[in-house]
Amino acid sequence: MPLLAAALKDKLGEDVKVRELAAEAHHIREDLVAVLRALTPSKDEAEERARVRESAEALISAIRREMTRRCSGAVFGEFLHSLVVPEDALEGEVRKAWEQVAPMSIKTSDKVKKVLAHVLRWWTLEASARTRRSALDLPQGLVDTFMREVCGSKKLLPIIGNAVYPYFSRSTVDPSLVASILEVKIADALLDLFAADAPRTPPPPVRLSYSEAPDGHAEDGTPIDWGTVDLSEEAADSPKVEDVEIVFAGSARWKRWSLSLADFYLENKGARVNVPEDDPRVKKLIGVLSEVEKIHVGQPG
Image (cartoon, rainbow, N blue to C red):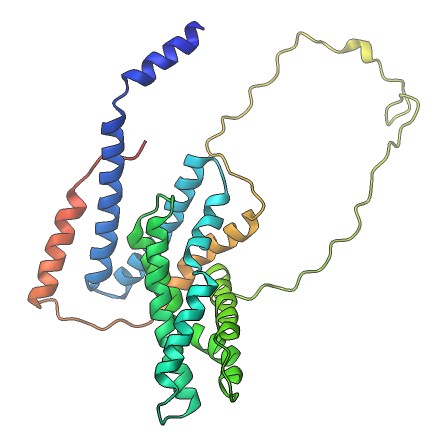
C-alpha cells in the first residue's frame, strides 16, 4: 500500500496537460518540417536522396514509437487499414468516373486511364482523411507522403490497368467488380511496395533429439553426481537490455516493409526539376525551413 500510495501521489503531482501540449507541439513541428522539406528544392542529388531517405525513416520511427507506446504490433495493421478505403465508397467513385468518361469518343484504354487517375486522386485524399480520424498518433505529413509515393508510382498503373482493362472492354461495365480488383491491387501495393514475395520452400520436418547417455551417465560413461549442485551460487549478471522488440503475428511483414521503404522512396522519386537558387520563392522556403528546424519543443512522454 505505501508503494501504491507513493506512485499515485507522483502521478497526481504530474502536470498531464503540459505533457500533452508538449507532445502535440512536437508532432506539429514534425509535420511542418516534413511539409517544408518536401516543398523546398534540394541543392544537389546527394541532399535530395538524404531527404527522401530521412522521410521514410521518420515514418518508420513514428510507427515504431506508436507500437512502443501501445505495447502492440497491431499499430502497423491499423495503419494499413486506415489507408485502404471501403469497397462500397470505392465502387461509388468508379461508377461516377465511368459515367463521366463513357460517353466520350475516345479509345477504351484512354477511358480506363481517366477512371484510374480519378480513383487514385480520390483514394489519396480519402486515405489521408481516414488516417486523421483514426486513433493513430502519426505525423500526418509523413502519411500523406507515403500515399503520394504509392498512388503516384509509375509501377502502380500498369498493375491495376492490366487487371481492370478487360472488364471495361465488355458491353456492360460492372463497377462493383472493378472496385474489388482495385482494392486488392492497391492494398497489396501499400503492403508489398511492388516487391514480389520470393518463392517459399516448406522447411524439412523437425528432427527430435534424444539422450545419447542413458541411465544418468555422462558422455564419458562416468555416473553424474547431482549432489554437488551449489544452490547458493549467485547467477551471473545478465546483459542489460537496451532495446525491446515487439513480436506479433505480422512482424515478418513489418520488418520487410520497414527495411524496403527507404529504397522504394529513392527508386520511386526519380529525377527532380531543378529550380534556380536565386528564385525568391526558393529563398523564402529555405529561410522558413531553417527557422523551423531551429525550434525545439518538448519530446512526447
